[in-house]
Image (cartoon, rainbow over all chains, first blue to last red; front, side, top):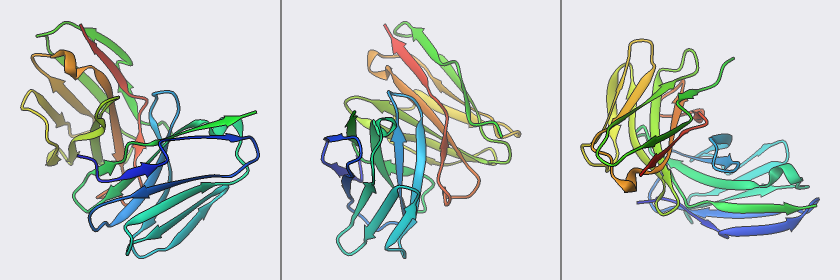
Length: 110
Length: 114
């Protein structure tokens, strides 16, 4: 079973616009991570936010975490064509595994 | 430094056969995890190894097994292949447990069972 659920399932934006996707999860977590996947290849780790953190930035990425609502959001600012990919949130619970959501497919139009 | 290396990249097998997939983690990473990705079920955890010990196993039948060697390289084996085993199998390594700094994934092995 999947711990996280991403919303929306798909997102199409114009180059230069911001993209926001959300992730909800069910149980208490140790950390939440976001990954990117291009065309069915391996996942690339984007950012990790721990349960005691509320916001984190990395380049054009901004992640928030609200443990009271069991939700997280990933914002990509000033999107580029290269940001076209699937984005997954994954939760870690100190049990040596990640539980992934179904992912959000982002298409950036030139 | 070299990333996580998975071999082979593509594999076609017949129902009933068995298959072994290999994963070499990033040098110094002692935790290796395996995930199965399918369009229907998404990314599902298979198992995790640390210092040759399996610390967690996902909800998969006993046909799925794995092991880790003293050099941290890992293999997973699927016996008596079924059509439903067709998937992208991803290996990930981490320097900390449990994945405290995030995981580095390989490019995966795409297994097709015919």
